[in-house]
Image 1 (tube, helix red, strand yellow):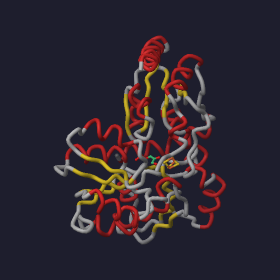
Image 2 (image 1 turned 60 degrees about the vertical axis):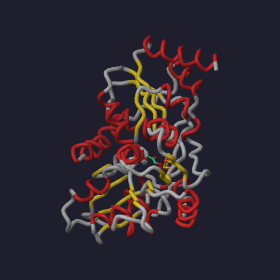
Image 3 (image 1 turned 60 degrees about the horizontal axis):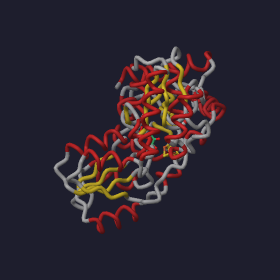
Length: 316
Ligand code: 13P
Ligand code: SF4
């Protein structure tokens, strides 16, 4: 305990000395969330990175998120405490794949999830996150064909809520979320006696459940399909006392702390992202101390990727 307090104090001191802000994603380990100045979802973190007055951003998340922060704020130094913190979903599509797909569908509008590399973003018309994907697709004239990548569960959710049939979806998935099945959710819901279900749209259980969600319920219980920060808001605002949470388990730390009277049960205890968990308090300290690992995007790619991100930020 004393060692942990000592480390937290050292991080606070270094942060001041280095003019740094610590941003952490909702899936980070509790100790890293607790030392962050802001914890949130990918959209919220991008916005915070852009608005932060500090010159250095310590990005506690995965590589594509730190890259996005660097693209939006090229004048800032963005550091990720572990350069190996990747994302299986962002690896599921390359820039060459996107170019070939666009050639097959000339005139189509490309929309890509923020979980992509900077090189892929540079090929897109629009970027989106889980919290604004439907709004971004809705903003595109209805007669235009849409190429949506790389997450197939998020893509079919967006097709459903926007009512679009002219949307082609890349067959990518996140191994953590794809592993959360409808049968598992059903079993945990019954066992926990929960009245409400919170689902991330990357989950494998999303597609069969979204018909129930669209009609407001799932076996008489409330279902909400939301980004991680949307889940946080719903947990606070809902009058339900017991929730099943279908996403990476890191979010439960903040949910439980901010809602002490409510019960939160993970849909799957196994839903852990090993990349998110690579960031530790010691690596955050070392990142501040030694200025590592800097994330930089070549200017030509960053400029093109920024255009897709800016179009998203203008929509919401
Ligand atoms: P959010 O944008 O909802 O935070 O999700 C990002 C992510 O990587 C989910 O796995
Ligand atoms: Fe990528 Fe999945 Fe981890 Fe999110 S949970 S960062 S999508 S591997």
